[in-house]
Length: 124
Image (cartoon, rainbow, N blue to C red; front, side):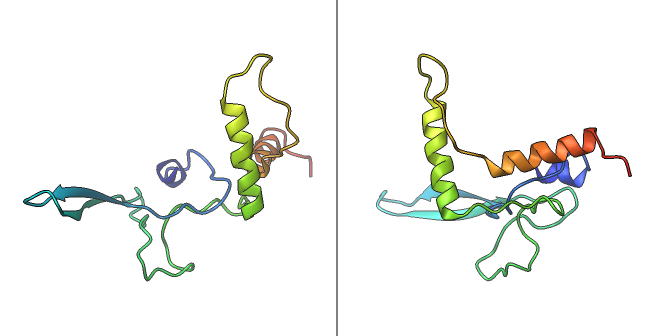
């Protein structure tokens, strides 16, 4: 998503990403009873902006991928629980198609509204 956003090929809707921008390798130490977790690489956006959220990072620092302006949609803890339950039911193939649900994916709804507004702009 960061690459698409940096190259202006997509807009990002939703919440800021977690900020995991490092790669670790686990190296078994002699004897096999211990290991060393070593950071061996990190991810960077095409723009050079940081993806990784370091332990001392503040919410105002640059890290992760932020939604585009006006397209942030935060999910509450309850929203996330409902979303996970919806996905669990939806992702299991059942006779008769997907189960009926009253769940509304607010992030998807925002994305669809943005696309509709882009494709069918209201006259000024």
